[in-house]
Length: 517
Image 1 (tube, helix red, strand yellow):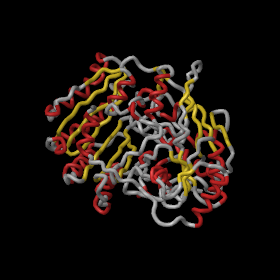
Image 2 (tube, rainbow, N blue to C red):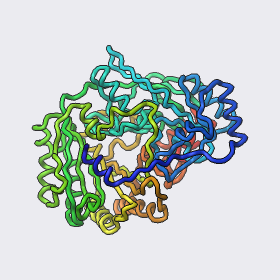
Image 3 (cartoon, rainbow, N blue to C red):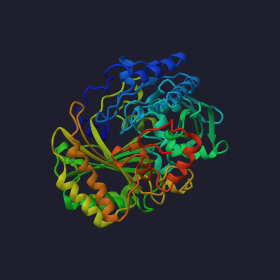
Image 4 (cartoon, helix red, strand yellow):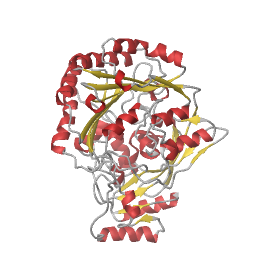
């Protein structure tokens, strides 16, 4: 089991709660259900286990009840479902893996028509072109297994095997190959979608290129994706998975953060070095202070890894506080598929396309996308974290800061800055800041949300500017439509809003934080 998975297991107590519908079916719900039935669209009906499964939220803090749930197995089913939503004035949302932190896959509020795409899960690799055709309901784990079986190929994507392809790719999709190869959406060559008037449209660089630009970053606002075509890469011969843990006091934490930033922002880090830092209370693992786990994947040999990591490792070790008590190997040499297995606690092979959803904590997550922070900002962040760390055993805080950008990153060196509507290509750091309780408890929003928000406030005040945010870590507290959109797609929101009026003039594909009309 990887150290990250062991840490999570020690931190979270996950129960078996599910979101379940309640109350009588409304007249409008009956109308939509009748429309779907008349159109021969498979459904999960209210009051059934299938409905509960398809409306189960990733974040138990945000439970919403859809008006109806379509479970299409063909593109024509998707067309008919969209037509029913539009005919009855109901907002329509796609659900692929159901991992939205803001429950956008079930509408982000009550009363939407959900199109659960789990049956559109094919993964086929062309043996000649090596192009992969992938359904939006495929899970990342299923896709990785099939890419391996059909020619030892890969596409850069995230490391959580149960995440659905659809939402992940349409809004970015980063992982342990992003620094050297780019985002998941950078490998999308063509997408088939159903638009608001139920037409089937192909978008690519040569067909409907403006829609293709919008889909790669803000896809949920424009259409329902029914098929993707991806360029693939050969798997590397060897990957080094590494874990370098520390338990740091406040002075060590301040110095250590500077060491990390200096390294990831410099050309001393080669493109093959994918690294992030996970931060939590060291008390959870029997240590003192704040736990810093520097982890990632180096694509190459162990010898080359040791050369590449040396500037960072030497400077970090000199600060002291190495968490020797964890007794874990620093680096493990593995093949590509074994790297996914190791990172995911050997769970990769057990991901059924129709698997039951896992119960998750009630939580509040927030993202930031930033450049290298000043020393003053670093000091203020570490002081706030150290002085206000949550120690309640029923409450867990967690930071994950991924250095996906930088001078040698494929994000900025292989792809043009505005080649897609994803807006954060030139930024160094992607932050995921979370606070949660176990799956059987209610989240104390009045305490937890301000505690998380303070870190964003510190950065913005000290740096003198607002920060961007990442839609795949959606935060419903930052406002609706334009207010949220200028965070998720800074610099691109105006163009996205114009394209929304062209492709979805009736506002069919909406949640509270979609691109607004």
